[in-house]
Length: 264
Image (cartoon, rainbow, N blue to C red):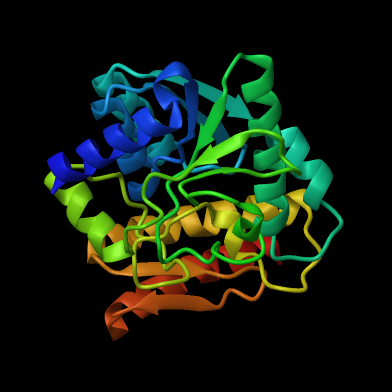
């Protein structure tokens, strides 16, 4: 299946003139973006990776991402967006992810423009909720779309493949990202960062962001040991878990109790 997809990307790239372009892949270190980077590299395109991180990012997944690009022999840029994230989120109500994506998107645009990249690439698949208002602006194949508000084309090599097909492709390519065993929003592995677990309607502060990181880091260690997926909302300390048994929940409550005592 990998060979077929790579050939399809080659043919599309020839028709679209992508072999004459420098492509910057927005690379989180998750399965989708890892697969997109892998496939474009296999197709012989001129690709580099761009990873954004901040003070509350998981260091384990960042380390894995750096090892992955080194193995591929792909140039990898790391950009700290902590200051921009704080400007966009502190003092506002959650959820934080909307503002974070805004910061990353505009940083990606200007990074690409200032460093001579012609195209941005993403790992969106057919299950992602993007075929709608955003891509209605596309007048050609939605795999390569120039968005007027951004001013630089986006290449989505996986957009016609379902999440299940992406899973199969990643497994065939032996792409197995480091997992924090987060609960995430869906059953598929859709991990992100601990700041997504700040309670809705809560005013975001650096102190609350620190708490979301510290609690969920400890919870993730428990989840990894128990091979379940679990996260905790803050400041409510609501536990979210797929397939937790009573013993695991008791262990999680003990971790939370320690944080409650510290927080007073």
